Image 1 (tube, rainbow, N blue to C red):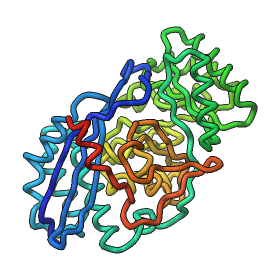
Image 2 (cartoon, one colour; image 1 turned 90 degrees about the vertical axis):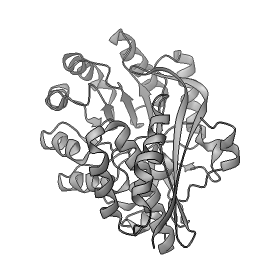
Image 3 (cartoon, rainbow, N blue to C red; image 1 turned 180 degrees about the horizontal axis):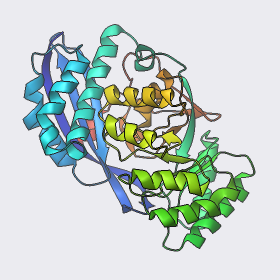
Image 4 (tube, rainbow, N blue to C red; image 1 turned 45 degrees about the horizontal axis):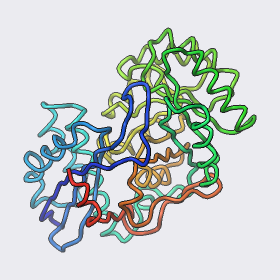
Length: 361
């Protein structure tokens, strides 16, 4: 069926509490950019992307003014053709960043539409490996007091999580080590614990930190240094002795291929909202499978539960408190450490558009 209309909107989602990490500082709100793709039968697919507070208006404008008109009249089922067309229309102004955020949102909407037309949930349409996925609570909590950090952890355990991630990357690494030690003691031996440095270290700092963190039996150390330093990731993984998760700031299939080719990652971590959409996310997962690597996710857990549920090499789903639960009909639930992709046609995320009007950007 042909695409008849495209609508892009921008919202500013307030967070329940101020969050913090080593790169972005304190974060009080996220920006949400939504895309609605309607075909000539009136069926609608919904996609979205987000920012940590800057750039959302530019993404929405790029979709509305430079991409939407290119889609009108095209067959909505020809996802690869649509992706390739849009990629080459906007690549010159950003082979990543804003352009790929915009393309990702559109691609997600087109896949949602395709799955709805097929009458299938997205996870089943994409491969249907297992809709039940391990989930962890991803805290953005670098500058929380230790008491607040442990209280947040206890609240997440009460919500059903059986794996926890915390932030590291304070100015004094000894403080990070002490906080991780306290968290390990609080959770007990063997409980899945991840730490995330949000690109805050040099390679040498990351190697030293990884060696100091070995004793805490981490599932992984995430984003230990800047995403562009592929050779640095290789050094950290080989010399630090802790598994590495990385990729939330990579924005193309080729970047992921490069990182995996140099043995710089243990857990590839694509974000469907900024890597190029469902189309690229699934290709990254296939590259990882060929290298016998498990895939994890970053953010937008209501979408990623479908993608991880579709593939045979799924690791953990990251669940974030991004504030969207107040604006969608059926938020993701975690039961005894697992999230389950819904059986509703498409990705199943239904926004409360009236409620979103109150936070329109």
